[in-house]
Length: 419
Image 1 (cartoon, rainbow, N blue to C red):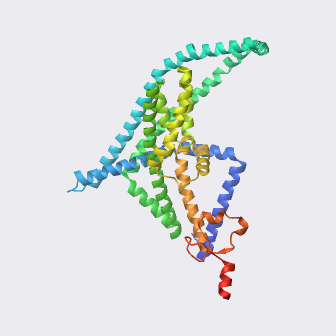
Image 2 (tube, rainbow, N blue to C red):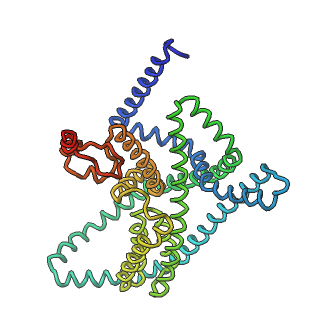
Image 3 (cartoon, helix red, strand yellow):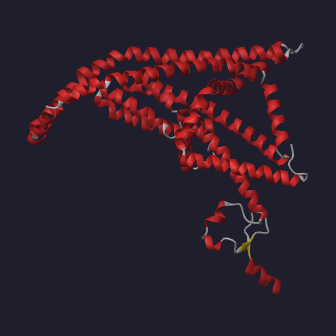
């Protein structure tokens, strides 16, 4: 329903309402952040199966498309059957996705279970006696420290009672965490089912979304939206699949290197290094910490060699393997990569740390294109080198030539006109 007969005023009204709504959301986020966060958590918990389904469908979609292409080209070439090809493609993509999950679980869980006794024995018979001997030596050489320790030990009884009194609430928290984990598993299973329906009706959902966007936005706006979604889809797919391949190679190289160096817990540490390598920048550090702890428990003398090996491995990945797979650069400086990982990680956890870099790269590219278009409207250069000069000197040159040629100073141009 239109409130004004003039279309211009209706457009202005829409923008005013949008600005008011955005301002209210920002005010609530600033002064009632706990309420907004709890409301956001409730909404996310309700839509969690749908979100899982969208993410899983996004991952399975390239597999389904390749399977469809193979079937249509070699199996149903003479008599096309698109619906059957789609159903078989979805079935194949689902089986591949489930197979990958099963392989990961069967690789990680048995390895962890088999290494628990060794970790326990290492703590009990190697680490703790070594710490006790070190502590005894320090106390013997420092009587003042021994007096402080003896006074602290007198409070062990009260400390034990306090710990026992806190067991019940901690047990309750554990049960709550266990329930949340079971609920997440349930939502993940439902997400797989939702993903199957997403893929089966992909064209219909895309058509409905496009109709809604075209109906509610101007031509320039909806073209920018379509361009943004296309670029985001390409960036995310290339980044995620490239990172998975890169992490698989790093995991295999870590396993080979640890076998050559005869280090303990080869499989479990290699799996940890490979999985955490998916996270940009922080991934190597996240994976190296538990690996170093395991090596320290089993063979403390080799922990330094392990750290050196991981540093060399990550340098190999960052300078040779990663650029070969992901490309020479993502388009972001190290600062913006770190910025995107921190922001998206704080908002969406591990998933945000993984997808934050490509998402921010797309947004950065769009913003950079917008800035360059505005500069061209002002007949200003778009090269970064021009804006490296002092700020007071910007604008003293006249850019009437393409960006590839140097701008002509206004003073020289006037002198030539006089001649």
